[in-house]
Structure formats: C-alpha cells, structure tokens
Length: 327
Image (cartoon, rainbow, N blue to C red; front, side):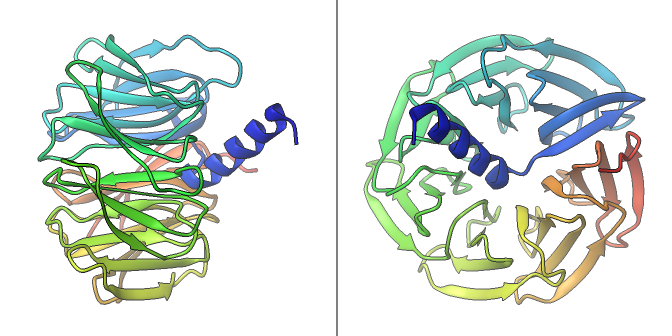
C-alpha cells in the first residue's frame, strides 16, 4: 500500500475513533464538526472540524461570539478541542500534526506546537495538570507544556497508532490506546509504564473526575470500566442500544457515565452498569458527548448537523441547535 493510501486509511480509522459530527446554529450549516466542548465556567461552547474553522458561542444563549479560520493545507482539519482547566486557553489538535493554543476571549492564536506526528488524533487536559496530553500516529502519547510549547515527555510502548488519550485528574497518569487492543497507562513524572489493560480496540477513553475509574470501549459495542488504581476490570457489557460507542464521558460527581452511539442516541449508566437514562431525538450517528460543568445538562453532537442539549436527570431534550438533516 502506498504511503498516500496508508494515510487515507489511517485518517478513516481516526474518523471512526473520534466520531464525525456535524453542527448547525441559526441556519448556519456547519459540516463535519468533530468536537463541541464547553468551557469549565460554562460560559463558552467551542466547535471545530473539517472546515478548519473554530467557532466560539455563548453556551447560555448559543450566540455566535467569534470565529477563526485556520490555514488549510491538503486534507487538513481540526480533530479535537479542549479547554484548559482555567478556561483561559483553548487547545486545538489537527490532522496536520499541530497543536494550537488560543485565547478564547479573542480567538487569537497564542502558540503553535508541531507534535512530531502526521496526525494528532486526540488531546486531553486535567484539572491537576498545567499540561496537555496528545495521541497520534507515531505509536506514542505525549505531554506538552502549554506555556512554552515544549515537549515534557513522550510515552512509548504502543504497538500501533494511538487513537485516544486521557489524563488522570491529578495529572500523575496518562492513558492511551488504539487498534493494538490495549490501553496503556504511564507515570507522567518518569515516563514508566504502570499498567497494560486489554479491553479490545480502543476508540475512546474517559477518566472519572475522582480518579477512581477509567472507561473505554473496545470497538465491539461494549463499554469497559476499570479500577484505575488496580487495573481490575469491574464492568464489561454491551450498550443497551446494541450500538458502537463513539464517545464516553463521566459525570462531574463520578457516579455515572454516558455513551454516545453510531446510529444516534446517548445513554447514561451507573458504575454497576444500570441504565439510568436514555437521551433520544438524534436519529443519526453521535460524535462527541459530554456533561456540562455543573452536570445538569448533556451536550451531544450529531451527524445530522445539530447539537442537542438534554436535561441530565429527566432526559428531556431542551435545545436543538441547527436544523436536522437527513442522510
């Protein structure tokens, strides 16, 4: 297989791993938006994707506040967004192998990091860390100093590309995984491998805010819940909808987690695997899913060019941003 074709195949796999979503607000159609994230203070909603445009909205009333268009090279797009814990910096990852730091108040670029890989598949931040973690197509996870743009440490041992990455809340551990059917965890201080877990092909990872649990999927319509301290598998079962998982996120109180699906819909589960709530209204594939900072709302991006917001407890669909598209 040629290098060009290999790259295409890798990017297709990354599309599955990250969840391709579309988003529309106020009759402004936005296609292939891969990431929709809420700032820690609940003030902003940021979106980005294949258009290579980052848009910043008011999360409270969905007004478009500002936007910026990134330089667009061949096959270049934004793969993921994340707000730093302070909320004063927005981080974007790109298929061009670069990580960019933005000031959300102005959407001016503060810093650009060349990540040393052809494709940055994921990024992660943690409340207890000043750094941003990244995964990519060089069989490594990495930790970056946001203030300087310098590489803090690279974590080796993966036998394939890394599709997803997560940081423990205290910043002392980093987890990454991909198609080699393992989830590896390293010590961020010294780079040593702490543990290897085997959930199957890893598409997404979530670390609970209290640091006790790691949730992942195995690309097999199942979710896996591990004890983060011991590595013990405490839960492994198919989703209630019987669909492939596209995204995972824990509630702020760490007592439940959500799973978004291909084919639409989001489900919330207890730590024992009990189905707590089903969030309906999205008929097409879900992309990113997350809780609002206060845990009262769930935000999900959908392939049908919308973002939906549900009441966490009642499951009521409270807001649909954009006009749903059939396809």
